[in-house]
Amino acid sequence: MKSPRKIATLALTLTFAVACPIFIRGQNPPPPANPSPGQQQAPANPQAPQRVPTISTTTREVIVPVTVKDRHGNLVAGLNKDDFRIFEDNVEQQILVFTAEAFPLSMVVLIDNDLGQKDQQQVEPSLVSILAGLSTADEASINRFDQFFHEGKGFTKEQDTLLTELQRTVLSSRSSTPPSGDPFSGPTINNAPAPGLPPVDTQSLRAIKGQPTKALDDAVYDAAMQLKDRDSKKRRKIILLISDGQNGAKFNNHTYEETRGELLQQGIAVYCVATGSQFFNRKFTRLSEYSHDTGGEIFYGVKQDSFSEFYSLIAEQARNQYTLVYSPHGESEKEFHSIEVRVRREGLTIITRQGYYSGAYVSKGKK
Image (cartoon, rainbow, N blue to C red):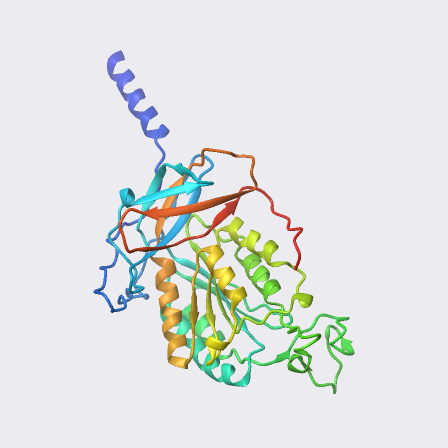
């Protein structure tokens, strides 16, 4: 029979074990080596099996993925918790959890289906290269958009399935499934064009009072809805947007502010690959806004090989971010809270989202 003292000691030990939460689970491999200046970092083997890390929290806490680059645009590895400072609404916060672990991706691939012919010829054959940057732990959903959102087959980790979808993705300026009753769709039967009538050519409708007919904001919003049920504590949620940036305000049901609010509330980063050989003479304002505000990045494609390179860089960058977790203190009644991350070392660039929404967000702004 155990003595009262031993029983009391055992009870205290069990109480301590239950009370202390485990914040990080999963393997913690060393971050990739920092490449020499002027050289791109060699990506890790994307096909290597991965254990899925998990962030567990016990109170209201904010998870902030952070990308750090040097002057040459290379990812910077080897930083630790003490190298970072984080501010919410200009009030410094205590970093409760820090990790440099690689997280698997939940990626929505969103492809512009209404590109000019030259852009189509560059983008379409490059799409199969998206698979090269994905690991077996990643999942992806392939979708297209023009005036309408053309949903694919949903998320899958099966690389053979993804390869088949990407190989069969044919870009076209023709809207394949316009909703019934749309003023530009013509007669329909069971929500499809009536037999004998050609598909609607949205190119011919591109300029209405100087506005393109493409609904980019709606497409990004729909892509965010696909990611709504993915777990942001176990995965990086990203949208890979391949587009020329054209956006018809009159054809969007969702404003930029509403779409941005949904992205920030869910912690989704938008990475954009802008198409167009003469990109210095073109404006990609909307793509830049989505990337900057959500902690993603924009890349400018001028030839097919550059598109393939960007897909792998985006996957590597999104997967190998630092993760900072803090419990906010300060004014709590605000709906939107700004976030600023600083690093103590000089000459480094921080890429992260600009803030988050603590409650339901309904935009009343203009399109």
